[in-house]
Image (cartoon, rainbow, N blue to C red; front, side, top):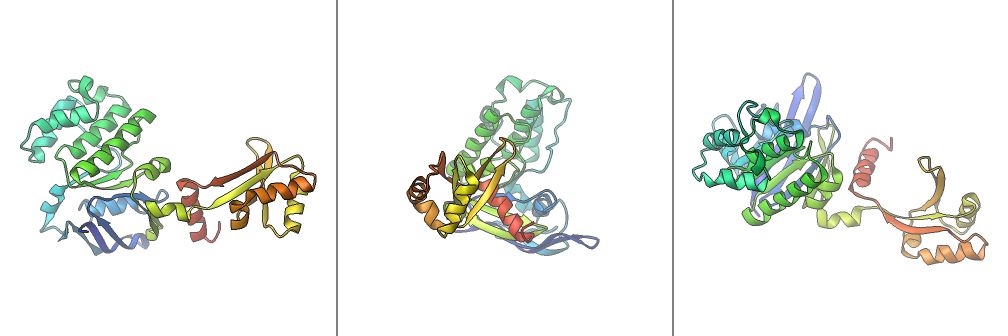
Length: 312
């Protein structure tokens, strides 16, 4: 499959600090890649370099197979983007802002403006000055400007900031539609990891400027830890019983709910919880809670970072 974006040893250094450090990414056409990392991990800097907004210290970026440099900036016409807070002309209306972007983008089909207003549910605000929009509708306008030319590639840095839960769902479905119907390739960063898990076809995690993990979404389930949670009338006694029978048991406290439980991570416990139940019942400590739980993308993300930091 053809690559939409490729970086080779992409690096950005400010003084002695490597903000992005030899980053090698390969994003295929039609993918939705969730770009994850803590604040300061290098996500926004990477995106800015991909867009030619800042110059890399070293390394190269290819857009649709063409090298991005000062002599070849026309490749950026294939990209729509949001980097941090999207700017609009506050004294102009929504439609006027979109008309300006449409002209700058060289969009010949003027129906695109009506299309994008409809897609982002901006109909009732199209003649309203941007400075009077809510934060959520300002975010919608930013996304509308990014997709008005129906780009082949979208680079989105926290695009749903300011949107209410319903708006977040609408944007999620819109991005899926763009990929499914127009073949749009999307690179999206967000701290809303639950949303990323619902839309991304691949997850990329960077830390301190380095790529530390990438996994296909369809393979993610195999990487998520599963655990058996157990609790009863005497968790300490139950822990001793299970430990004496060869199970590795962690005692966990839930300070928020002023309670505690036992956590078992081994495959046997997760696969055959009924054996745990039988053992505890026969010992006189029937469990009140016995459930298998799987970590979500957020838990997986922080576990990977914790492993990267040596368990801290």
